[in-house]
Image: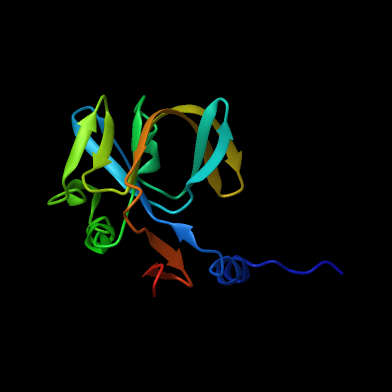
Length: 159
């Protein structure tokens, strides 16, 4: 008999896999839209591609997909408040967060790594949409320490 894989079992098991924490943002018709993301994955070096996945229930995803260029900002130690702020309603989500817009791509100031990317392809995958993005620009502060998501909590590498 096949093992039953429930959403709760998936969540609990995958909570044992640490991920980085990022913000994906873009300016759409003069308004900054975006959300936290912990699904950032390097996909290909040639061509340079990364991926993100979005739940079909997301209200931000339909807005974000209207942009031709997205910013992905990897958060570091000391930026925990940004994650709390991003829980606010979409209309005030970015209030007080310093974001630079570069050709539609929203980049959080002080991020430890940034990627500017263009949507390349999207694949329906269960209850999510997996989006492949072509990397157009990127940079990293090699001295900064990341925030990570592990066991359902935001942590630092030393915690």
